[in-house]
Image (tube, rainbow, N blue to C red):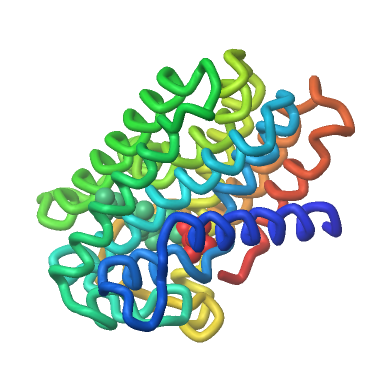
Length: 287
Ligand code: GRG
């Protein structure tokens, strides 16, 4: 686990560096920059890690990989800020800290999310991002839109007459959670102007395992460790992988997906060891 932990810490450092480069947050700075910076703070930086690692495997220049890693975390942070709003999940706590609308107000949270999304595209289209920046930015936009579609399906399911089936939940989550993870895991080859079926399969399996682990944490985790409210899905009577499969079968499915993710990487040999460790981490994480 040592390599993965170091690589994840590296991704967190990259995120911190680019946050302070992109946002001037002095004590008298405007609330928008402070709120954006707050939203980018304190996460695991798993998506940034996936961008950096898939970029390393495909020989992408470090500066390019770092910008793309920052961009995906901006999109991820925007989605969390908006997801926490009273009109969506209505959460007070995120990453163990007050959510943006609690620390400031709803208007600031909406605008901080909007500005984070814009900043992501600004980063991706910077002239230094190499010859494949336009195509890679287009797939990022598509992933962000698929995420929103997944969120919409999730909201619609709350008032539907029938609970979602396993097939429907799997599709919903492949958008809501999976789309950004898939983009992150394939960003390296995309930025290099290449294609990797193997990283695509790895990232798809990882994304689904990640979501199942999230559903398990909602049942088994405690608020202090997870850093956000737990038990919300069961409380709302929502269909999840745990409610549909049962706790043990959900955990088994997540383990199978991790095996599938690792198997997909065989063509990269020992070079992919850190990505394999990441897959194992995803289902053993406590937050
Ligand atoms: C509101 C546009 C919009 C989209 C919302 C991401 C999302 C879509 C909703 C978040 C709800 C949620 C908890 C989904 C489960 C998966 C997930 C994205 C968990 C958070 O990701 P982590 O654990 O977070 O990587 P950190 O804090 O480590 O960055």
